[in-house]
Amino acid sequence: MHTTRVEFIKLERPLLAPWLCRLAQEFFSARQRVLVLVENAEQAMALDRYMWVWEKGSFVPHVWDNGAVDSYAEPVVITTRESNSNAAQVLVTATGCSMEFARRFAHVVEFAPTYADAEVAQARKRFAQWRKDGYAPFMRA
Image 1 (cartoon, rainbow, N blue to C red):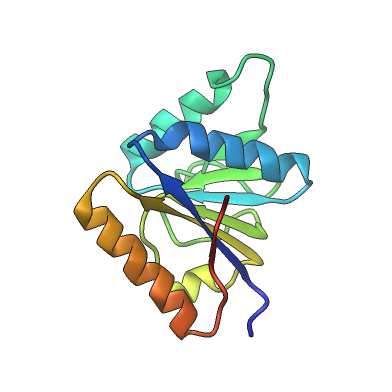
Image 2: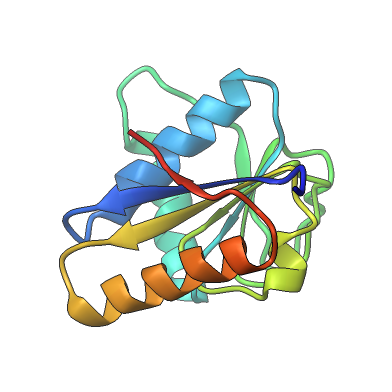
């Protein structure tokens, strides 16, 4: 059995940004460095902006690693690339990534959308791949 903790979160509606912010806050509060992997620059920019206003009174120090900033010192980094620029222990992935990249983290959080058949099939395939590779993925309650 591998030591990487792999969890999936059911996503019943296509509202990913609040979950990404909540998870970033949760891991930041536990003093864990987080890498949030999103699909493209548009999503990264939107999440970067949303993270400033998502919950009144909340602040998660973060940066969008767009290649123009030094993100090593940041506890939370938003990125579109398979590059762990802040030496994060936690990967929260809002998009597909290689298993090779994901296995480098102590904790991986993926999403299992239940609102669209294609996304459901993809999440099941990913869950099964983790199991096949000797990990013990679980669904967060």
